[in-house]
Image 1: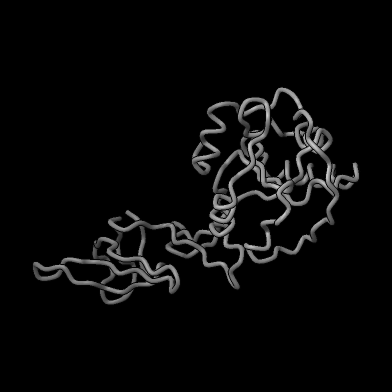
Image 2: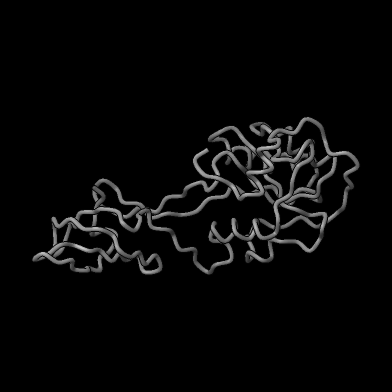
Length: 225
């Protein structure tokens, strides 16, 4: 996969990524279904110890389809009291087009994975596991492994949840070579020295008169080499 889930997910997946049987003795517990409005990140962590976040594996490129399919199954099978929220982990990034323009795009943080908040029972396991496009739970042995609270918070924060206005990440790296494409230094080759994502600015070092000169530039003032 192109991106790697948290360490606990990796270790669990290494043991077993596809469920072979429903969990034994899992209990059912009723709870009110959440709305579709995303609350602050801390509010996505329930105090109910039976209500946990699990990771399911999907066919590559089917993450959003699985989310839609599972939401429909939850409604049609009246499972809203056990399966509460389905998320495809994504984050926004600002990329440069070939013309040097800024474009905001969404990238999947963990391609091939979907998060499900649920109370684990035979019924909820069956509904999730038999959703079209799902290949299995990330699990330890034959039982789905829930994520730790810290792992869930890290993922949700990376998705920009809990922020008044999520800040897209800039699709550039420190040390990357670029060409200035506008302004007084048009055509100069430089190296990215600092990235200010909050302001969408770059500090670029260019060579002038035998010494490095720092420039503060907007992302759309540069192009990748």
